Image (tube, rainbow, N blue to C red):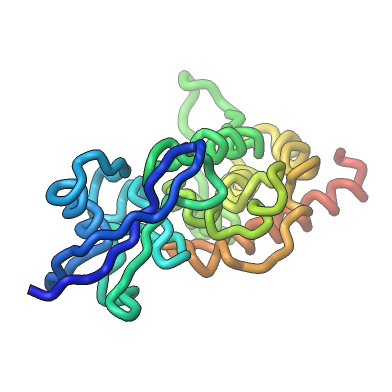
Amino acid sequence: MQEMDVSVWRGDANGGGLEHFKVPARDSQTILDVVAWIQQHADPTLSYRYACRVGMCGSCAMMVNGVPRWTCRTHVKTVLKDNAITIAPLRNLPVIKDLAADMDPFFDKWVAAGGVHHPTRTRDEPIEILDPKTPERVETDTGIECINCSVCYAACDTVSNNVDFLGPAALQRAWTLYLDPKDADPNAILDAVSGKGGCHNCHSQGSCTLHCPNGLNPMKAIAGLKRATVSSFFKGGR
């Protein structure tokens, strides 16, 4: 049976390094399959995170040859180079252990960006019916497909160089809520994304859009927030 060289980052918040394994090469093998094989057959102490294995939860995201990916949807044959693969935890996040990153900073920024809906009605009132074909509603429906896997956050060089930057996923969530006519306080959202670490820190390099496994466009959402905050400022809305 053919084998491939797999380098896996091992360590914790205090540091670590790569450990090398020989892993059997099989047909239709994913990166998550490789990690699971190492944990089951070579080193049971290897820590990593996954849940659904079918690209629905996003929890298995890791760096593969330096690129953030869903490991359950990444086939070995698409990333194998010179019969070798390097697997590491998502960058721009603290490491808990081995391949498991701490997602708390990611979700803290998601909340800080105004990612909480401000309702216009109580649960006792009838549901407001919206036209699903309006441009705003179409874009809102697209934005809610984000599953918070943090691939865009790991891909973002602005996050790497600016610890205060809210990040692509948080800002896309803010844009989604800002466009939603059911949100009662769009100005609060603009306040949240226009300050320190907000949308105007984005350099529009587009790594978030390039690497989003769901094909979303956070860069477009951030551009929308930039326009909305500037327009609000000159209209005296903030």
